Length: 270
Ligand code: SF4
Image 1 (cartoon, rainbow, N blue to C red):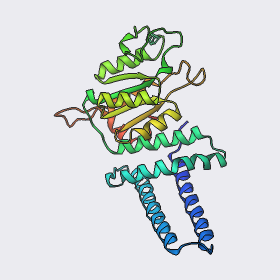
Image 2 (tube, rainbow, N blue to C red):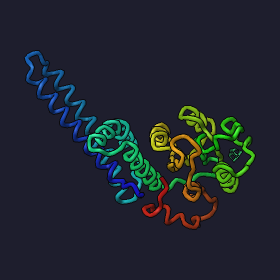
Image 3 (spheres, rainbow, N blue to C red):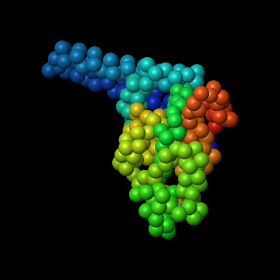
């Protein structure tokens, strides 16, 4: 099911509104206290207005960028700040409205992918990292692929075989990680300039937020046997995400399908 981007945008706006309402309430209470210092209230109020203003600029830039399918680098920093500050509150608000956190996270991943796509990022194959979770490996498999993916014997019993073939075909790097800490370490050590990340909603959301300086296209895994056990991934989505990032030297020609990808809307990358 296509998770609408507007779910995330809507809850971010609701959260901004909540913050402003709470601040107004706090201001009213403090201002009517006989012990309140007018100078302190003025300073706090001014600081709050600046922060809210920057968050609003970040959100407006994000919405405009999605709407016009155009990157606005000048507001990246404020968009990131808005997401980091308001997303926890958006999750709380979503719960109040009966929306599951994972549904909101899926919407965020879709928004994040679309924002990356608007940037038309192109990097050399060796700078693209495909980062996949340990739970894709068959639970019965005894090979330690988080230590070295070459320990996989390509038996074909789990998606790792197909992913390795994709990585070889496009000459991109690939790593299997067992958690967020290892994922951050691998990204840093590999000097990746672009990441195709496969994970569940929670891990993808935190990973995308952690890797603020590196463009990430996130792809949700499928969990037919429940969380963290023999999970699957749509290879076609992984391939399209890899192709999106690849850069062809001395060529204006785009990969087949890349134009459709960059227009984005019909392509489910998340
Ligand atoms: S493809 Fe086979 S050897 Fe490789 S990780 Fe999966 S189950 Fe293990």
